[in-house]
Image (tube, rainbow, N blue to C red):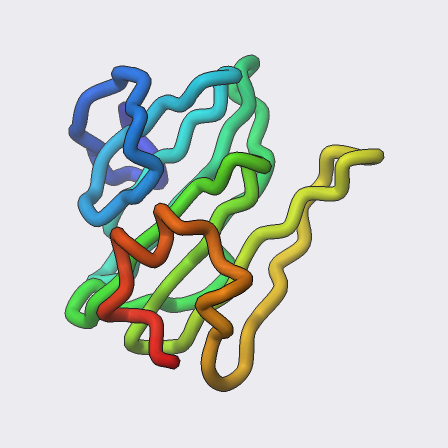
Length: 127
């Protein structure tokens, strides 16, 4: 697949693990697809629905030279973790289906995070 002039590789299979740590194309149950690619040493990502409509796209400059991770939780909310710029979560509005990016300042409270997120990216989450 070609995104923004950059070829993306990776399997296009449905995956059970919802943690993303590499560039590629990831498909999930329900038709959600996440495309993670590189643009000028920066991490870029798109989240698409089953009809390939863009649900959300990266809005921050995350360096690929730093530690990063993406995690799709069971509510189809996308967590973005970065040692470079901090953490955020794309929160889905169940009524409209649209997403807004909630940026976290400071430490995350592990007790309120998805367990899979903690097990996959505990080293990026401080507290």
